Amino acid sequence: MLEDLTKELKASLYERIRDPFLGSFASSWILWNWQPISIFFFDESPIVTRIGFIVEKYYPNLCGKLFGFGIPLVAALNYTFLYPFIKMGIVNFTGWTTKLIREIKENHENKYRLTSEQSSFLRQRFEAEITQIRDTSQNEIRTNDELSLHLIENFKIANKIGQNSAFIRRCPPQIISGTWVFEGGGTVVQAVMSRGGTLGLVTKVFNQTFCIVQSEGIVSDLFFYKLEPSKKYYLDQEKPGQMTTRIPTAVSYQVGIARSENSFEILLAHFDPAVDLAN
Image (cartoon, rainbow, N blue to C red):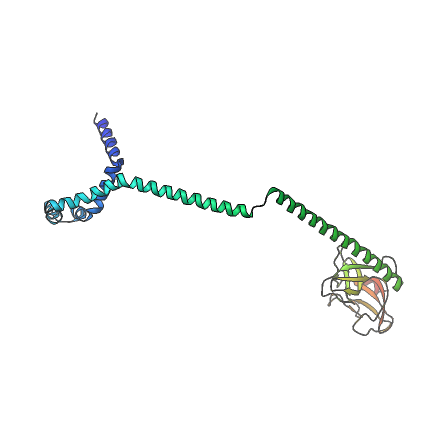
């Protein structure tokens, strides 16, 4: 039975605490009378002395009692009966401003929003432009390929070399005429020190992007230095892309023979010092 009474007491206290008027009055009274409450709970003097001091200091007469309890009462009444109307006004004002902002935003977006017809027109226009650019690029690629083929054919005829002895490839900016290069199955050639892929000599560079690579025949006035007539030349194992008359000490490649100081015949051949020097 005592347990039931305790539960009922707790429920009753909880209900009173949740009451808006009682809760606001209790909060207001504690905030307004914080000084006497602090003295009552935390002062070290005897309880009777504390009570007497509080009554004499803060509630000496009817005016003091009204001042101590009346102002919290007024605050509680305002919170209970006046604050809900103030809150309603705040909610209505917030809703009005939110609606106004949304309408302004929608009007601004509608001003610049495309209709379905405009979107369809722009999409078709962009697709047509993309198709035109793609077709133009493909035509330019086909044209460049045809020009490359004609250029190579004329180059072979003019230099009297075989069908597979010259080709056009992309090249890095550092590649110049007179550089020995190789390709490993790609479209870009690189300077070479030892045999790697298809070997050839760059005889012409276009705009530091494309070059003609020749693998047989005679070239003239191509090197920036004078050649040693009748000397065999090999790939330089110290300077990529260059050739030298020094006989390699390791497996390398013989690239040709100088016919004069300015003329060179490309004669590519594998060179193995252990075999070729023994013969």
